[in-house]
Every structure is written in C-alpha cells, then in structure tokens.
Image (tube, rainbow, N blue to C red; front, top):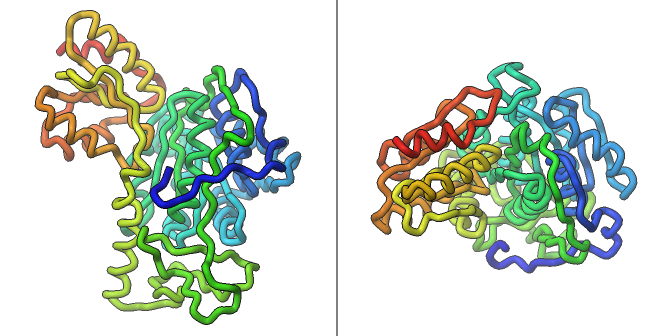
Length: 394
C-alpha cells in the first residue's frame, strides 16, 4: 500500500461488479474483471488482436453494473476519451496492442503532464508494424517507459498469469489514482489468451485507494490544483465539482495556467519524474525464487518467466546455484533488489530471456555494470525451459 494513503474497501453496492468465486478464465477476461472490481466507470477502446477479448467482455459486463462502454473510431479517440473520463472523476481504462499503443503515445504524454490517472493494458504481440497479430511478443517494454516525448514518470505492471491479470489490474487503478499518473499493464499474447484458475475474493476484500481530493470548499480562492503535497502529488478536483481548474499540456504553474519559462518547466518536469522515482519503494513489486545463494540469476517477466522458473529448478537439480527474479512491475524496475543481490557478493552473472532482442537486458547491464547473457527471439513463440537451461549451463 502506498505510503501515507488510507486503504479503503469498495462500496457495498460494488458487490455486483465482483464475480466472487473460483473461475476458469482467460487472462484478457481476468483483466476485464479486475477493472470492474476496481470500480471501472468508463472503457473506451478499439478492437485489436490480441486484446480484443478485454473489450468484448466489458461490452457486456460494464453496462450491467452502471458503467459506460464506448467503442471508439480508433486508438487516438480511445485515449482521448479516457483522459476526459478521468478528468470527470471516473476510473477510466482502455485496452490495445502494439500498433494502437503507438498511436496513444502523444496523449499518454498529455495525461502525464495534466496528471490525470488512466490505465492502459497493452497485450503485446510480435512487431514492429502489423507484425504477427495473433502471436506473442514482449517488444514494447522500452516503448512503455520512453514512448512519449520528454521526461515523465509512469508505472507498468507485467502479469504472468490470469490470476495476476486480475490482481494487477486492481493495483494499476489504485496506483494511477494514488500518484495521478498513467499506468500500464504489459501483458503478452500468451498470458492474455491463457485460461487458468482465477480466484476472485469477496467485494469487501478488494483494496480501493481513493483519489486525494481538495481540502478547501469549491470556490475557495486559495485552491491551487497543481500545488503538490509532501508526496509530490497534488490533490485532484474533477470537472463538475465546482472548483476553478485549468488543464493544459503546456508547462504550467500551481494554478494550472501556462508558465512558459525554463525554471517553471524544470520544476514541473522534475516533480513529474520524482513523484514516481522517490516513491518507488512503495510501487515496485517482484517475486524471487531461490536467489539467496544464487551465483546465476535469471531475470524474466510475463509468459517467459514461466519457462524460466522450470529452467531454474532443473538447473538446481543439476547442482547449479541458480535463482529467478521476476519483476511484477517492469517500471519502476526493482533496481534496489538487483543492487542488493550484487552486494551479497555471490552473483556472478545474469541471464535475461525475452521475446525481443534484448530490451530489459540493457537495464540489467546498466544497473550491474556486468554483461548479461540474453536469450532473445524477435517474437512469435515462447522460449522453452530447455533453451533457457542451455544458456544457464554455459
């Protein structure tokens, strides 16, 4: 839970949104159900493989619980619509894949600048361009972090199972509202189209972190919509609440009005970055397996981590001191954990299997100043446990 934020439960009338029980469910459908359980108010999207099942599921379910589903004309309209929905106070969400994600990048920067919380799921496929629309990829990792122009902070979750698709979607909405930031869920085609057991708790057990509202009454002259608290996050006033709010993509001051100076820009952009960077300890999530005495650490995420875990366990059976670090948040990356592993002094090398040509491997090399061994494929198929094991053995 974020530091200084009171955790609340979803309201009792939200019980209809939560399909409490044990289900056999696609990752895409679990993501949609996670959004509903989190209190989704608006979905605006455009069909694109392999994320279409998210939209299809919500087209039926969201109107049943009083939400709004809108199929837009394209991804440009989709991202614009959910930004508007967020400005009006709704938890807003869209789903896409690589080409649509690219179209959304300019407005993702707008949401970061205006500090409007939105959630975007990107079910990755083999790319660039149209690529292999129905086949797996993990090639949008760096695009998620750096895709829009300029410097800004974002958060990106990376589930490896339908259960995590449900859980991390809820976490994504809470994080977006807590830090007033765009949040991504970087699924991949295998996880999105995988059907597994998903356990959904009672509505009362679903964590709900509300947006931090103004402390003054509407109409109060002293209200500054972009005056940040100690956590670097300003309270948010929504359209229609009665507050005087000006939202712009231009560099702005605490009133929200354009402030076209180098000093104002430097102050604003550093805060947009630091509100994520300095709160990373509360955001970062990861799983580790057999790393305490590991000399070889495999770093893997999404569907690839499933093969990696099997490879690590076989390597252990062969007497190799091998462990697995699985980032559940790709951004911010769990860099402090990587540094601690190095400080222990046992780690000799890292292995990073990915369905791309080495995007996260570069991050590991940056953090460790060590060459990392990659197992890379441009997309279309998962790496097998055997292929990862061969790299570990070398």
